[in-house]
Length: 183
Image (cartoon, rainbow, N blue to C red):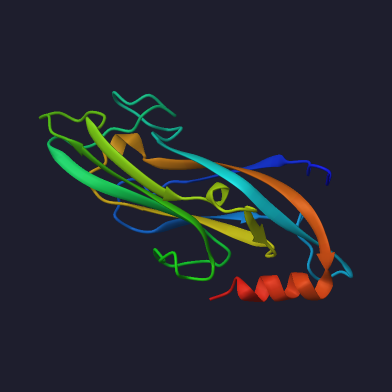
């Protein structure tokens, strides 16, 4: 029986707020991934957990790092994505650089700013794949977009935790994988 890989966690967050613009954060993997050496090392993402939350600087009735509020009598959505290339906007799952993606649709039918009373979420994550997702790039990019229905005082934030392990591969395999993850 093969040895179980030692896993560890990498965390990241991005703040799309309520500005209806795409925001992105770079997660540096340079101290883990090395494709330029004869003893190349790549990263396997075993799982991703994420949450939509109020930002650490949320104000008003919002609790920092708690549930986000929406504007009064509103409905809206927010989308996050993790990719191997920097992006200027949302990409489809068919983009070769897309590692994972998720979204939430929510509504607040009451006449004051409050947390959503109805919410639906959907995601496509590496833990659904047989062997996780291999990454051979020095950086990954966590991006998000949120519509203007989210309360400005919430500073809507997507927080993510990756469970990962490292694997040794040949340099040619690592370079081939890195090139295949570019769009």
